[in-house]
Image 1 (cartoon, rainbow, N blue to C red):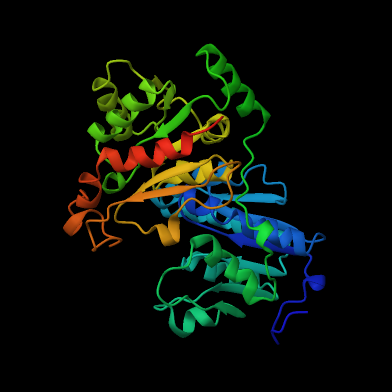
Image 2: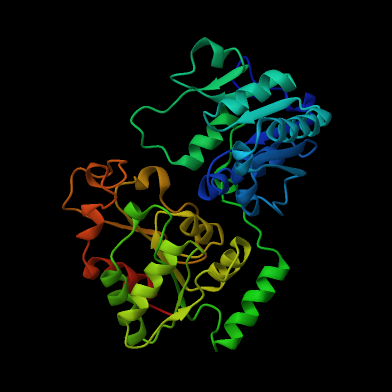
Length: 368
């Protein structure tokens, strides 16, 4: 029994809505909320509301009943067209008659939905700038941790703790299901390249945020050392021109090009590829979280963002997840988009390849 006087009696909840309107990695880090809620109340129907481009992060989640989507492009439509889409979404949500709403960001859309849908219970994060108007939208508010050192997965799960649900240690894993079509597509790709499962290293060097990226020279050096040690390397990147340019620049520095799947994989296929790799190496980005969700050991290079909040989460199938970060910069993590907001982070620019290689070689020791 929960010690909370205002704990939500899950036996009286028929249907719940989880709202996470952020980027891909953020949505994936919310996946344990859905799984834990299902484990503690198997009779509840659970829906989620996310941006359409992040839908693959939750699509096929075994504990999810319906996935509702918002297109980011709605904001660019004319007033009448946007209103029509917003109203259609609202009517779909209202028809579900939610008893419980769990809002996992400080987006005002979640607050408005809590007021409009009128669930019996609505839980959200504290919003320092929201004031009384924010508080009136919800029955339960989640206290923000002091000091900022609590991982984002645990912060998301705090929404459940606030209503009396205590997640067990073993049920906090990320949940991402690639689906059989994606798995088969990757098996076909790997076979065409002569690669075997667990006998290659997956590197995703880029991010949509340039200030989170390491140097092309550093990546090229790591790939050369992997190739010399007999490890094939598969490079991936998003279709974004900047990310494509980065992988091309890395390839130009190599005597023997890596296998390059940049821009060729969807998110489900990226997950299926990560699942087949012996090791994932990348930066603080959604592909890092995807690899962790597939229980592939992930080695992540961190700069201005903080590993306490964003490190690879969960227990890999062997070995451990690792973080490599500069020990020369006591200013990190600063949370800035590059030093002084200049889009270039000295703590990553000066990170030496030897430090990264030590972590890589330690992970690859022993049998696959």
